[in-house]
Length: 147
Image (cartoon, rainbow, N blue to C red):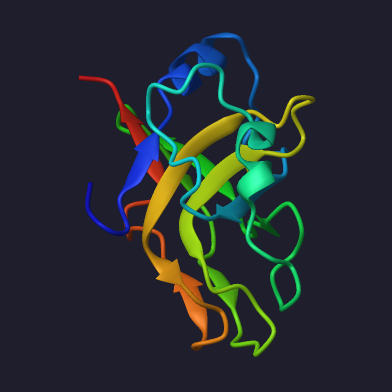
């Protein structure tokens, strides 16, 4: 897996069929974790609580339980549904974390905080070293296509 790749949890496919997400109204967050427990696509029923024990320090500008995604859109065109949002940015902070390896995208509105996907940050990424921007692909965070 290359740095910056977004990987969908396999369980997410089941969650769609069970109507667990409403991307038009749910609050999505990106929580940052260290490398103590790397996520895998096959993690069974992944939720934020599976990873939050390895969350990076919130001493700097990072918010406990992750950054809220803004301008979230869920659109379908020509048989392809796309989830997108604004990039996530954190300003350099001398007291911030130094050990981010993964971002866990999860649904904070859903009762168990179901995890949707994860992004490999190529860590360790340090908030102390400079500004951090997690830029989503120009085609969206994730797409689901009918073929």
